[in-house]
Length: 187
Image (cartoon, rainbow, N blue to C red):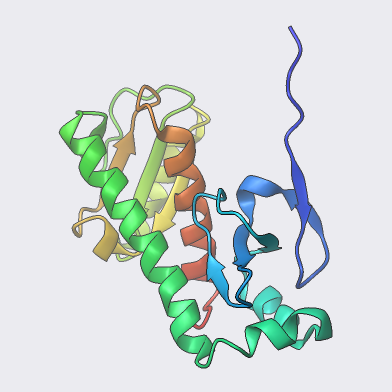
């Protein structure tokens, strides 16, 4: 069986080539305005950015894209819009996963884990509790993502089961949101 190659794109900030799904896509509309494309499906000239403050700064300084970025009168609002879009997407997936019973709230014991499950930890959880969770899941090979608690209804930890139909999109958004939140981006 043939496996599809994962598409890669170049970040307009740092110029590194990375998997497309790990980058933020900005679209230059025919009117000359840039919008954030969370689903990576809009028509228009696409630009990709690492979800990292350094890359946003480098992209802003890049003479090729600066003229378009300056048309967004308030870049702070633009970046805040990206944050809000990612946050609402994660909240939607949380609500859907709970409704479909593919998400389980956990405290210290992650319960029965499978390799493709994802543990989401509230960033406000104590260091001891984080360490216990890391130790518990390390032997299983489960992925752990830490995000702000306001997206999780202040639950300490959530297990996302690998049977969740949208786990790949949800995990992608979680990883990007984690990078945006933890790097101190202007968001």
